Length: 88
Image 1: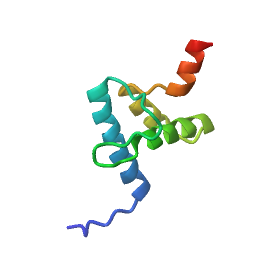
Image 2 (image 1 turned 90 degrees about the vertical axis):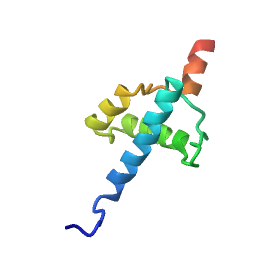
Image 3 (image 1 turned 180 degrees about the vertical axis):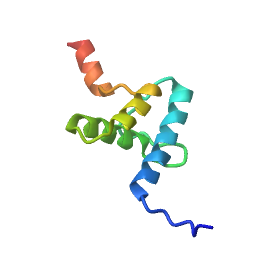
Image 4 (image 1 turned 45 degrees about the vertical axis):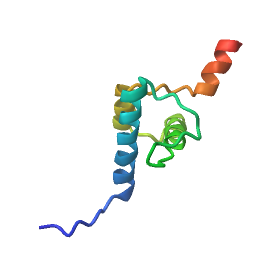
């Protein structure tokens, strides 16, 4: 029987944030949101989504995580960049 020790905190933290993203996607049909968006629990989901975009752009987000995010509707172009393109 384990002691409940978490050896990979980053992985658990990512999974928790991903679950918030799944719920947001189910409710809104997208993962586009303001960068300062907070979930009803106070989780800064907008910041987390932005961080995932930055990690992908930097090449530090794993293919598995990219695929999982895309499966729930991740758009790798931010809302602000998308709006700029539309108005341009």
